[in-house]
Length: 472
Ligand SMILES: Cc1cc2nc3c(=O)[nH]c(=O)nc-3n(C[C@H](O)[C@H](O)[C@H](O)COP(=O)(O)OP(=O)(O)OC[C@H]3O[C@@H](n4cnc5c(N)ncnc54)[C@H](O)[C@@H]3O)c2cc1C
Image (cartoon, rainbow, N blue to C red; front, top):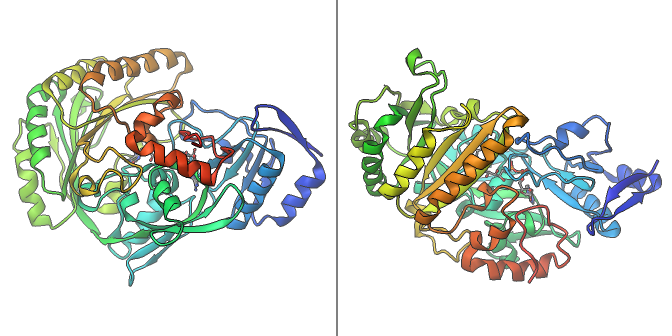
């Protein structure tokens, strides 16, 4: 039976049953159409705001499946989306009507403790990676939510608890296997296809489908000094300027993110604080425990915390600490700015907004970056915002569709109000789907080179379901 699939020019095309059977016969994985088993898991993303129905899904089990799926897409000029872990806020890992190349079943992680490297398939989550690498007390910098996909995170840059010590995720990428738009499987590294390798380290899914990532690993853990220090939000006007000084002077090993939200019912918080606005310092020290205790001391000495649960924790556990607040299935909308500094005025604007959160699950994150990542030249990879010291993510989250407008409007208001204090750049992986016109700004001076490399590797813009870089 034929299936109607959307084409790149927004038209549609009937793909004959024989064509589909021929593709099916070549696949190691499976071909799904609406109603088939596997169709819904493949199209369901972390952000429940996104509910798209592809015409055809190839659930890949290897690079050959990607090659075959892309061959059909090229020949029939189909709209293509590429899905890794399915976590991106913009939800462009799935397209409506087109061909979805689903990589989420490719989860292999192979660690080589001798060479301190890891080979990772594009469906692996941070938990998959960390569990494997931590068996050997090794790690590479990744994000803070263990269900996030390694693939999308890496292709956008990637930062987390160890970035100040070890750099961005892309600073630790050694090579990648990529199926390019013309269907060839190539290796990209410092010595092979160097321009493609450069573009992959922050340029998103614009240049091909990565079927394997090779990372450098570093000794870490298995325990790290980590945990939360929780204060009443009404102390934040005094605490945040002190935090700003501590964050500035922090050794590379020390990372302290700030979370402002209503307190979840955590067992170590007195019940009278559950549901009340709090300021949380989320602390991780990527080094020696004793040195960590000393480094954290000035932060611990601030104010009168409601709780302080900073102590040695398994790194894999700490990497999953925020998972319960970030489960899939909720409606989400994000807005983000980079900051080189946090002025008192910016702090005031954020705190006013946090006193009026539209739903109990909304929060504002201030990621603490810098250190090793800031010592890499801005043109060494596409990720240009190396001098950002804080990344604010306005994270609006709710359950009821009726709250869509109020939540999105709240995030946009805070975004506008903090814009005068921001540096102008933005982390491409924190951009929602309505910020296509911000892509050039996100890459700043690196955009031109990205557009030139895009022209070479994807002149027809086959890979367009992403924060799109147009071929020069
Ligand atoms: C709860 C949560 C917490 C987060 N925390 C952090 C954090 O701490 N640090 C951080 O850096 N980021 C963080 N992020 C952002 C995260 O990096 C991005 O959402 C990232 O895109 C997720 O990758 P994924 O594979 O799950 O995404 P997907 O949605 O599957 O993919 C995103 C895009 O990447 C492209 N893509 C994916 N896989 C491939 C591939 N193999 N080849 C080519 N293109 C591909 C596609 O264009 C796709 O649209 C967080 C996101 C969430 C939702």
